[in-house]
Length: 434
Image (tube, rainbow, N blue to C red; front, side):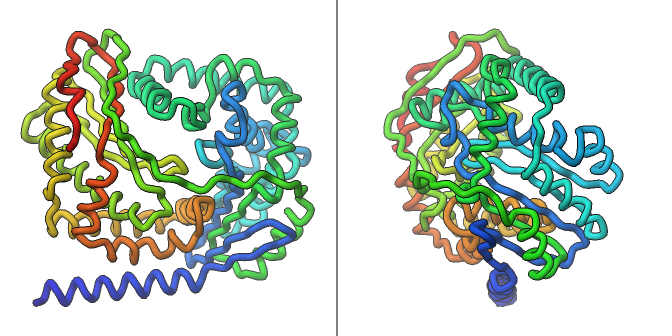
């Protein structure tokens, strides 16, 4: 009885938290720029300017260009602050300014403590409005990124990721590498980078999210002055997130002499805006725990088995393992997936998974930067309200709903294997999850 009362109190507290958080969030349109503001009692402020599209904005021949352009905005100086002056000011006032890009969006961000917000905002606005893309500094940044790409080539995990994405998402924009390749990164010139950024700086592509100890009046004034004259141009309608269906089971192998073998299996997933997604999220949190128990604890086949879920515009689930016994490991993984698919989830599994997700949600909200990023990503995919109401959505998932959703999207597996090809067992890798 006490447990039931405690659970009810927790649910009511969660609902109250979500409702209060949603009331506190303000959505504004300032000269065409969509702005989301969430006040915080913390003595810190974080701002994210999101650039929608990600790899949808460029071709494979330009892969890496957005990552380079947005990194350069905070690393190569601005009209007001040359590189060293920008860095010195950021260091002096502990201002964290960054830029980057991934599959679905790019960003320029800034975080600082409240007393130095004016300084941080000045750097943030300058990086967005007036980056100079100095030839010398841009060249140095390119070399830095090229060195990073070269080091990734010797990293088996990174090689496996590239294999996996190329195979599972061939012919889609998820086969394009946001970080670029050595060839593309080496070829970019200043004029190309500058033109790309100028085209990117379009109010219809942008989203500004601010979380911090500020008033709405503070935010409006700052945004109007800094971004009131951003350029505006028509854009093609951005596609909404969709579900990923994988029916066939396939094996993609790259033979390489390594101390162990690296394996990744890509499975289907519902759209992140679908009512099914949180049920699937909980199912994969449970699968992750089960694989740890079955693959590592019971059989010692791997130190790092994992099951994860990506919530991008092209969502996918993944099972991963490194092992010297690939046949045994893949059989255990498929067996566990089949067991869960065929009614293997329990009420205790679901309760524990909900508790873990709720804990991670509250931990994320401890940071204004993580909070701002989460709100922005949710808005890009559909609505910031989905982030605010996440706990309510998680609490609402039932055992039958989770069971049915898992069975619906768990079908084929696109396996990628990096290691000793002689150890691959086509029968094991060809097993279905049904």
